[in-house]
Image (cartoon, rainbow, N blue to C red):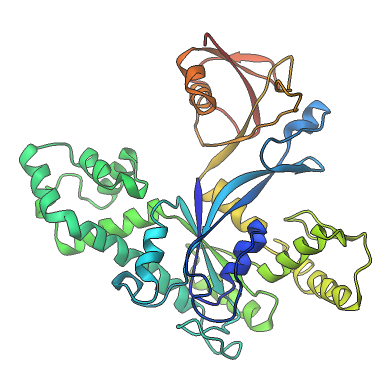
Length: 398
């Protein structure tokens, strides 16, 4: 799974990425501070199942704090976008190519309206962030349309001549964008294109298909950044009404980064995604005032706290519909090294016990005999549908 952090230059995108991953990235107040994509690891937050067994887990990857498990997710921060990116303007071509493998996107916008369309700093409240939401969707749509048009004539003629199934052919051609055969079939039906030969599609129908494919393969959450300003809070309310079909989460990447850095230096205890922190060290006067500002103007004001953790959780569990599954034994929760519940896998909804076995190791899938729900001690078959936070033991002949 790969999540792309996208947006216009200078909206706090790299700050958001660093707050999410604590990676060492360049943060600067000018366009194109990020030229090459930054790769990092963010962590979704779930309730850990260790408390159900009265134990403390030892994650092999990620970490667990007070029975809150943080499971790793790959994240990429790409170059800032400018109008005309699909035509190669700015860092456009590189930006779009870097996004090709992303399963979902986080679009960071400057909700305070203090960054113009070119990514240049201006007075807060003088730019409408709604333009950025429209602009990014248009750029991504044009990108997909260009991808389809480059191959369409040759591809559509070949499919027509060989009389192969349209949905299978489209999936095969565009699987690199993250499509599935079921997804393509559903899109064709919704767009009333299921009975139409590809060579007979009009320009409008091709564009409609490209836009639908983009929405399905690059689902997106809007991170309304810099929410700790008056203009941002006013803009946020308006954006929620204007784009009611989108998920828009208020956030303050700068606040989240400050809290994580303070926790890293043992000045505070802070659990990402929570609405409070505890001072345990001796912050100086400047640090104390900064922490008080964050508490009063961000944590206590918004349901989502700083919003950064909530954005990533929304992407993984709401947009991508993943469930967290733990491998474990009915008589032994430890691995060979004594680590308790060391692994946690993020699987698509409706995954079966057999899917889980293959996810752990091919041999387990090939030799699958049965599975056991460790919480209930119930034996289940290969078609058994797994639930979020299940602990499963796989019995295999291999």
